[in-house]
Length: 249
Image 1 (spheres, rainbow, N blue to C red):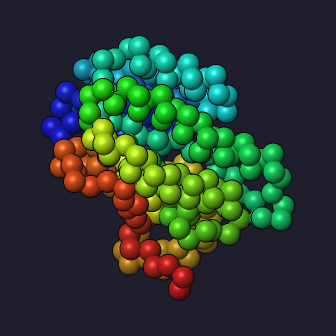
Image 2: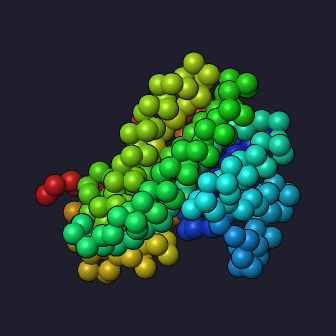
């Protein structure tokens, strides 16, 4: 098992990629703090099915409220002696043309996708530092590179996280903490099907080499690799996992 005897923290654990992360990380031997906005019944039932080794602890964290973020981080820090991996996976998406986007909505999206997760990371990293070991994986998006129409706020917030990854990698290297970011392309999740029309999905697939939508486990396999010792010499990278999406054509 790639992550045997490790402790991981995953935000956005109730999404399509988030649930697959919980499944794969526990299968690979990691104890996981699963951070979600709320403990709804559907998520609790899902966790009950996969939590056969009592290796998942659910933590409520509302990324719209700073105090909730701080309280979640403090709860995690008090509950474990070490943290080996942090995955910043939570995200919110709004679709709105640039000229029609209200700044209050843009600020709210940045609060969720960027500022709160930076604050959360600051707390969690301090728990990593004494052990001189750790891996941080920030989940960005192909939209952060391409800049999709109608998604300037989402693209900008994800792009901010991508470049912050490089800064984190440089500053945390003395503590043997690696930081990488992945940019998934079209992935079969509820977010994709809710916010991207079939027509737009086809347009993107026509520009890709593999010409198919990824399954969540294909994204998560890369994350497991980045969390494991097999990627011990990889840091500061922004890795595209998009089926060979061809940019600007």
